[in-house]
Image (cartoon, rainbow, N blue to C red; front, top):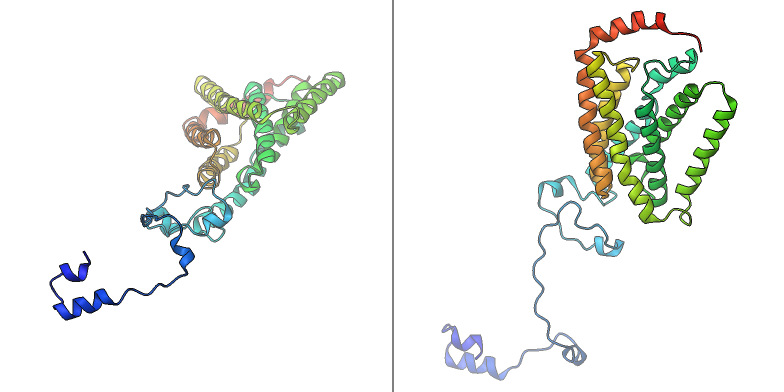
Length: 294
């Protein structure tokens, strides 16, 4: 029964007139041939990463967010203030992180000795940097989320070259093996995406294991060795900034977990630098006298 008869607000002549005059159609008859669809439900506010996997045309029709993240902007939109902040922080880390290890590497190269530099953590970091760079290159991730790894990798390779020494045969063999591994990781025909993802998972214990070994060594020795305090301070700042850029721009859980653990362990290393300041000073004053020429 029509609503105009059940409302009780219209008199009988008016109700009859409403029934006698049919409603005018606003479309063609072809519009009535399709199935009847229920009205669409109102869209709920999206989470910050709810549009991951959508096409560009679908993202333009997303409802306006009303959450805290929505006030900052959709991280996947080019005009997002949150994404802009992440890009700026990423560029800053790219610059600062590129010179992160220089205060520690330059004395090693100039003196020709790796005394005070942990070799096992350096090897683990080199593995992690190599796999991480290959993964980001193959997946097209923004360089602002990983660019500093290139310079850090070069610094590690320089330390390892000094460790190998002037034995050119061993150095040539190590270089050839490393270049072969890089070619394997970069080429999708040699290393599948599943294999690369598995290797990326191994970088988490590789990075964390090297840092944990260094933390344990610092605790036993009551000093941080030849590691520069500037390196640790910049490392902590870059780790905290990388934590933001990773969670804003990337969705990979392995990379996010690595950034979270890295920032936490970087804070522990920084606290050790402050606690063992006197022991580190004594090591640097008296340790150089014990260095033997190689």
